[in-house]
Length: 109
Image (cartoon, rainbow, N blue to C red; front, side, top):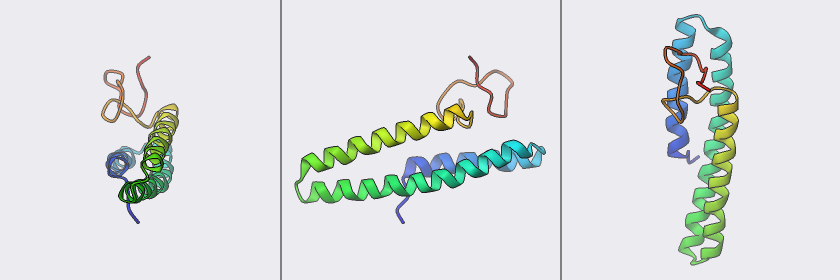
C-alpha cells in the first residue's frame, strides 16, 4: 500500500524517539510512541489512498474531484497532527518549539 511520504518521515522520527525512550527506560513514553506509530501507519495509508484518488481524478480531468481530494487530505492531515500535538508527541524537531533541556515530549508554553 502507498504510504504518504510526510507521514512516513514522522513515523521514522517517532520510532527513533521510541528506541531512545526504551534505552533510557522511559517505558510509558515508549508505549505512547508505539501506539502513535501504529495509528500513523493507518493515517499514512489513508492519505496515500486520497493521493491516488486525487491523481486519478486529475488524469480523468475531473478537477473538482481532484481539488476535493486535495482539501480532504489537508484537513485530515491537520486534524491528525493536532491530535498528536495534544498528546505531546510532536515537538520542535517535527512541528513546534520544545522547552529548553526537555527531551520527552514536554512543550514550552
